Image 1 (cartoon, chains in turn brown, blue):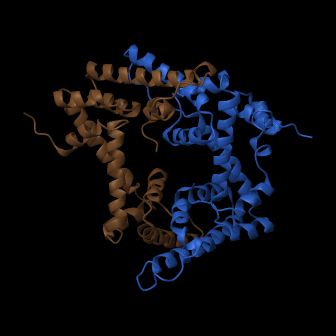
Image 2 (cartoon, rainbow over the protein chains, first blue to last red; image 1 turned 135 degrees about the vertical axis):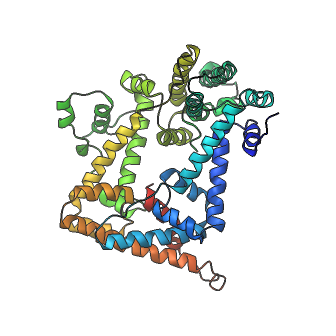
Image 3 (cartoon, each protein chain N blue to C red; image 1 turned 45 degrees about the horizontal axis):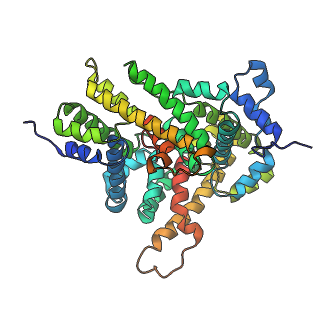
Length: 209
Length: 244
């Protein structure tokens, strides 16, 4: 029997939650990374060096920093960054960025680990059972999986599950549209129908919020 | 007198401007209808400087929202709107997030549902044919945003020698770092110096507020009242680095 690691169990558990399990897991992981960075690593020289080199975070992760709302941690880190930038403005030049956003590095590494794990456990019965109850993976992650398997085709069971989930999404959108008509005004929207637009958007590009 | 459109409440001239951006147009028409003439002018730029945040971000975000309202309300069945969307399979993650948020507030959800039902249909067709995994690309809003941004950046670059503008700019939050890069690339010689000096002054002000915010977290100074500007300084610092 193959040994299973934490990512396997985390992915399996993420299948019980709404949306793409890889997006859910990534979102949780990056959120925890940023939370711990601002809570306990603000004065860690190596962390500060990486943040300085990247001139902060990319737009996507900077907006997450705002959502996390650790005012003191964010103020300490950004005071340092703004001093460096103000110094370069005093010399009539723009600051240079020397490395990528540290949260993007985490995101990329963990995403790869998730995709590797998914591909490795494609034939695992327990995983397949969990995946079939999930909302399926989003289109960008399905694309990543297809690149990962390279010459081998995607397993038929995965395409069948994805197709089935896609049809359910379309059906919910159609029902949402039907219930906007005057003849159906007394029919109430189910929870899935009420969020069908957001669900469709998230399926096409991954979780955006 | 300008006519206002019945559905959107917009000025008709503005709608024509957006329709020009929407529809494939000849090079000659594009030159004659440069967007700078249509969306926002100098007085509006001055008004934006009185508000919090980067004015270039405000102009481009507001224009995108206005475009989405126009497109999803009045262009829903227009091939000029739907065909590029079918080809790109929707928008990039950043602009999908914008549509997602707008669908919860301003955009008619029914129109969003019509568009996305169609897009999911395209994906389903590809799945059924086992024709590879399609992936969204060439987001139509990215090119539009670049156009709006280019216009707003040029507007700031054009007026940064103007004394009234300079006075208002120094009192404002300035522009964000990504837009400052674009503006300074357009300025030669001394014209760039004003912006660097002004941004330095603006950052010094923000740094003082950040410093106070940090100091007042200390248990010895916890009883000192924090001003609104100090409390929001960390968020403004984040937005200065990445935009709104």
